[in-house]
Every structure is written in structure tokens, then in C-alpha cells.
Image (tube, rainbow, N blue to C red; front, side, top):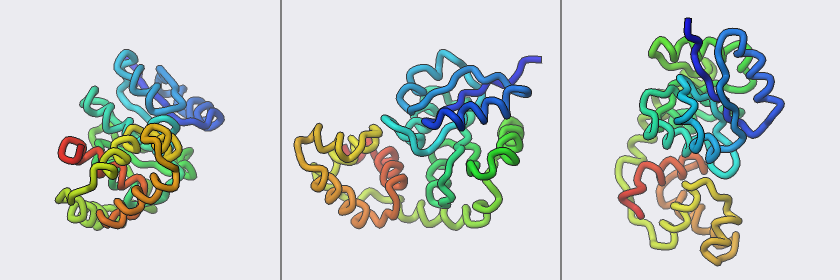
Length: 212
């Protein structure tokens, strides 16, 4: 019987090795990556059934990489494995196409359960987070249902942040100071009533064609 093909993406090698050891007796790990950009470049050729990825990764964050993967490979299943016990981040992950959201602190007991549930066509969220998910979805939808006007500079900053660049990298590209980038970032967050960087990135992905 053909085994389910998995890709693991996380910038912590020890964790990647531990997850691989946990899953390989039952599943086939066909690739591991330490950043979102490398994941995007190779995933299609590896034909995974499921991609397990972190939210926070260098070069391109997991939310951006996951959303792009779903466009390239609509049938692939995404399970986020993260340290972030944040309902809003989990909600944004699901809006970007995720099927699972597992906390690293619960990985040993929950990750295999999540994989099995996702393969059955269901969704899985670490139970300690799932109670607040529905309300968070509703709040985020209302908050993001329209696209308020941003200035040209804000749009440029947001575009680069969506690409996974750090504020220092954005500053270098736009030839402004990191402090100015931070000012634009937090001004946008206040203007859009957004509370986290992950939400801002998701907003930029959602309204990319409308704002740039």
C-alpha cells in the first residue's frame, strides 16, 4: 500500500529530526526545508500529500508559503505546527487553506491525530485553541471584509512584508530607515484594526490585487 507523502518545513533542525523520527514509521517524508521560499521551489516536484510547516520561518513565512502552495497544488493538505497559541493566527492559517493547526508543545500526542483527520477530509485544531476559533473567524471576516485605502508607501511596505522580508530588508529595498518601516507597519495595523503581524501579512495576501 502506498504510504502518505509528507514534507516538513521548519527552521529548527532538531525539531525537524524529531518530527521525522515520529512520523517515518507510518508515513514517507519526501523532503525537509528550513524556509518558505525553498519549500515553494521544490514542493511541486516532490508531490506531497501533506505539508507540515511552521508559521515563523525565514525568507518567507509559513502563512505566505502555505497560501502560495495551495494555489500551486490545490489538493495538498497543510498542517501548521507552531509555537503560537494564538487563535487569530490559527484563523488566518485556515483562511489561507490550512487543514490543521497543532501546537509544538502538543506535537507528540496530536500530530499523528491531525494527519489522520486531515487525510479523512476533516480539520484538526489543538483542543485548547478550538473553542475560540469560530468567534475569531467571524471577527476577522468583519474586520477584513473591506479594503480601506492605504498610501502608496504603505502599499510598498506591505507588498515587501508579504514576500517574507524583514523590516530591515524592506528598509534596504525602499531606501528608508527601519524605524520608518516600523512606523508604516504599525500605522497600517492601527488603520486596519489589525492586532498582529500575521494578520497584516494575511491582509496583504487577501487584498494583493486590490491594494498594489
